Length: 85
Image 1 (cartoon, rainbow, N blue to C red):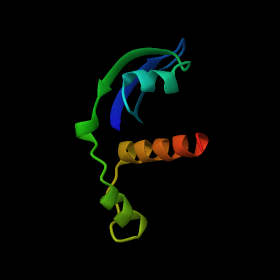
Image 2 (tube, helix red, strand yellow):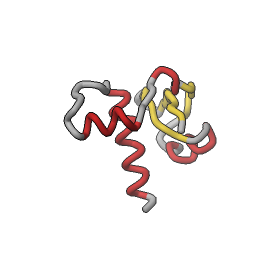
Image 3 (cartoon, rainbow, N blue to C red):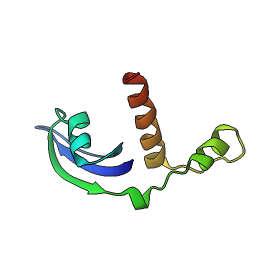
Image 4 (cartoon, rainbow, N blue to C red):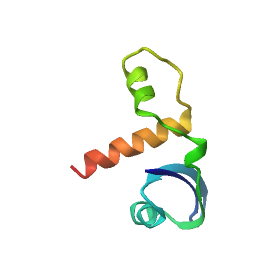
């Protein structure tokens, strides 16, 4: 799984967000229809997410580890898993 930064423009707004996907094709399939993709950039190296860190945070052994972007990536993954179940 990779993390991609997207800049999406609709007729009124420009949005910037980071979301997970296997590749750019999957990313476009999941998020198309929200406007025009202005830029897509692989930012996986900037936002490493480790399962052991997630486990420690959830179990209360580590707090404040993830920033907003990492949290958004984790939530997007969980949301997609539940929607596709």
